[in-house]
Image (cartoon, rainbow, N blue to C red; front, side):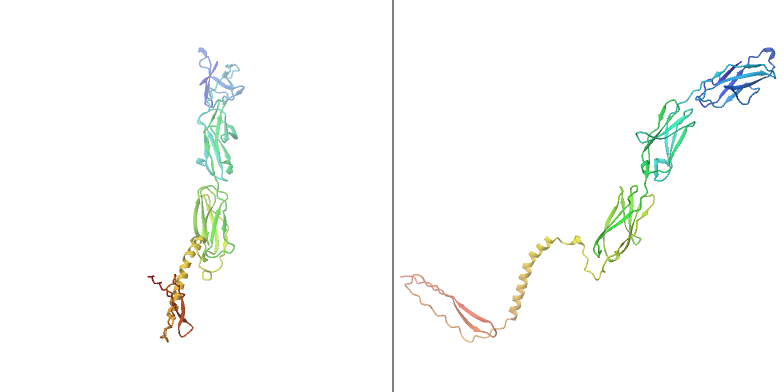
Length: 384
């Protein structure tokens, strides 16, 4: 009697059929036999049976066994035994290892769960799976199971979990690695802080700087500024950080201010800041934009040019008014006294220079006195 296996070298995990063959004597061909099969020293189900075959649903290389069968005729105590049979099992190595990340794409929000699934399309026996973080391969988890896929979870993702990952699989036939997969951790914005930079006594015309910044949050971040819950301005920070803008104050700008930060993962609002503006538009001097004022040097130059012109114009106006107020002169009361002639000597080599003679000619009404001035010069006669 013999025992055979089909297939004789099964692939690990596959079904094997065992057949117990008995050499019958021709004269005893009508005799019914019963068979039983054994793995090592343990009888296999269903025990004694009229069938000479039995199926083993899965063969594993990691646990080799020897098989044999026993036969008997009717109720006799005469038994026949086969030789023990050891079945060689072929193991299929793993290949094409892949790493899948959930949520898909590797984009996860801080605080959520991150799942790594390592799988192989083929491979038999117990497979050991490894999960690694970073290019240097820091081992995070190791699992061994008789399965083509296994998973590892990070229940609460942190910002430091943003990295590249890969996995490996080995069933004793060699280790195979997956490709690197990147994980991006998105950080929701924190509550922003609003800062108002203004003079101690903010007044109409002053310029106030409004600065809003969230300390944490993945870019880009959209900021909105509010005055009494009415949007003043929106501004984006593509690389993160804060934003600011300048506001020229009017009376209407008194009140409460706040700002909001939003990067698509939930908006956060700052605390309220109050701004009080002193005075009213009627009680204060007109406000000027400081950017419109001229530099002091330019003002001084303009004054230096225009001041003499203004003084000259004022002087001309004064003279004109004086002439208009001058009274008309009365007729002369007496002719002017002839100016006495000075003697000229013919033998004088040099003519004498006459000094000017002054004479008051007419005293007009009022305090004004007019004078006549005579200045005469006589040429010396030519000598004969």
